Picture 1 (cartoon, rainbow, N blue to C red):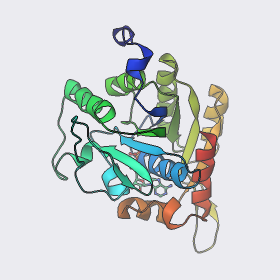
Picture 2 (picture 1 turned 120 degrees about the vertical axis):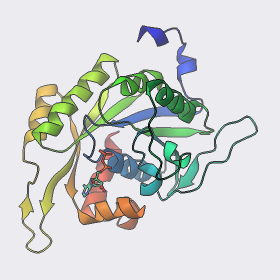
Picture 3 (picture 1 turned 135 degrees about the vertical axis):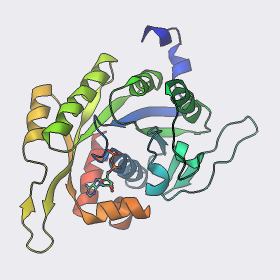
Length: 260
Ligand code: ADP
């Protein structure tokens, strides 16, 4: 932490960007990227904000697929990459720059330098909010990103099962250590409503997120059910808040957007 405290707050701030919000999780596979995408698209379309989406999940970039962006960014005269816009959101991802099937086998310093490029050497223009899809976990990359980005706050995504919540707690504690406010917990895959009989099943358990939130003094800012349409939207690159804006799930994502 001390290493970066020599930088002034102006050097840390991304020019033209009012607020930077991290979407984080202690574990992979809990729906962090899906949440980041639907949140960013909801903020842009429902709340008419100028929104950017930075895919900092360098080892498993999902934004190109989820936002259906497959071209490479152009570069300005002063050597800045131009983010690529879809669904009203300006996006940048390491996935735009590397081959689709190529393994990303970088060591720590290379990851940090890639992240540095993707935040500062990008012509974001004026943004109200930059949503950052963080790498999962609480390692060096996450810590450095949290410090360097001057985060306004972090949303923690978790499923309601114990193994995910235990790691989500680590995430909360990591942000607290670097004094980033936690905007709340998003409970993803909270329940599954049977399309045949309508009965809800709590596949990943019930009540765990509430308990964690209460113990840590946090707010639950959204409960997103498991829905085939959410998964399809991610795979097809049409976020559910675009394909079915009036659905229950889209309303749940709007609620998350309202809370940030
Ligand atoms: P993470 O970023 O935490 O690794 P992803 O957002 O990539 O997780 O989600 C993991 C998988 O779960 C993806 O296939 C995604 O489409 C799916 N998924 C995420 N949230 C939901 C949901 N609420 N309902 C159904 N599928 C979901």
